[in-house]
Length: 447
Image 1 (cartoon, rainbow, N blue to C red):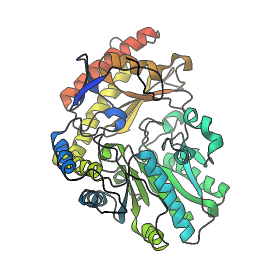
Image 2 (cartoon, rainbow, N blue to C red):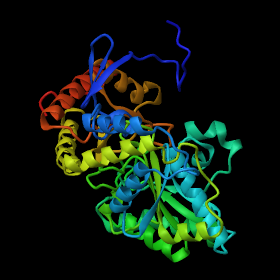
Image 3 (cartoon, rainbow, N blue to C red):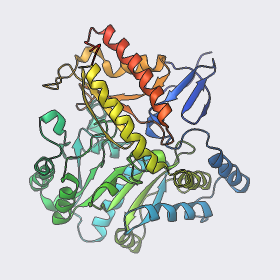
Image 4 (cartoon, rainbow, N blue to C red):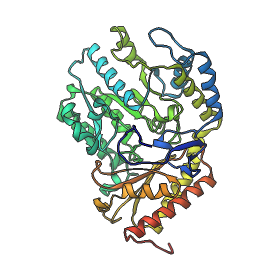
């Protein structure tokens, strides 16, 4: 059958038949273990019966209510739950349908807040290189990932960037607070270079996502960037599109540090793949100033959709009922140790990193220098394909601004068990062995 669909590429995958828990089956009956939760989305696993039942109940009542015409119980209920999980003071919630929309909303409310409080000169949003904040033009202006940004660069106004804190590549100790200060102080240098009066905000993923492969900030980094933003009057935006919802072993990754943001963006694991849903969570004084000025000049048709919000409520209730945040910590510790042990067998694994069940490993040509594998080896694509053929789904990107390097995210649903981690490791070893043999890379037989 000829398909009329197209996405990023013309490559084909099997047709999905069903998905339950951490497993998915194609129409030929072949089973796949969802080792990346889709794109780090399906936090609670597939086809959770309690979420499906909640959505069915809402469908019997209403599937749409336009936010300018009606308030809805699911959206009010979900907003209260989200605010209860957020840091103190972040009380106001603005719903969207996905991560890119959440980031767009964050930078727009930040800008409008500046204009209504006499700071019209502030418009620059500093981000990091590499980074990923979404695929809309506004989000791309913040993103530092060359293959995704360069074709569209003439269409948007590029924003200032500072280096991501890749201590493991730069030969620095991430546990040393001096390392954290080294990278965080680059923010102050950039603010001064741009002119503090022109800088609006700094946006950062507390734990890196696809672009940096679960990069955990070095000691002291988050606290120092909070201090710098306060000193120069910047708003601090945490992009928790991937980290929110318990994935790092805290409901929000911000809870790992004493470095409260002014705005949080949130999606992916929010409704866990059951419905398109995202949110922006904002410090109350920011919202008050904007609303008093005449209202937020922004919005989306499906914002606060009652069916999506009913799914979000049910997902949050399942996360709490099954204590998935604690499981992310326990199983993440186990899985990270198992991934780290692979370095004994495969000298071409240069680094294993992450927090909770947001984990990644990186392949290199030389562990001492962290020189990447040859670019034309296309390891970031080939290993994913091998693993997929072996029944394991993982997620990959180029490590170094999208141009070189190869990292792989292993981020199963938060319901993962020890036995299922054994399954992941068995398929991953099989796949790494095959990849190594194809590319004549060394394997230590008796590590």
